[in-house]
Image (cartoon, rainbow, N blue to C red; front, side, top):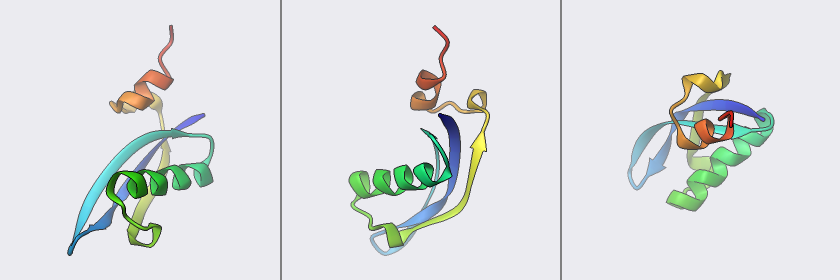
Length: 75
């Protein structure tokens, strides 16, 4: 598993809402799927209204997202 950072925007009612989201996925295709699923379940946004400006693999130590920190924590 790898850490990814997505930057973009999604349509929230009549305006665009910008986002930056860090999460864990196995590859870039899985990362896109997880991103679309997240906005669909949390905000009810169809995939066509989510605009991804950049999706890049990051070093897990750069992230402060709880899911990324917990996944790469060394016990």
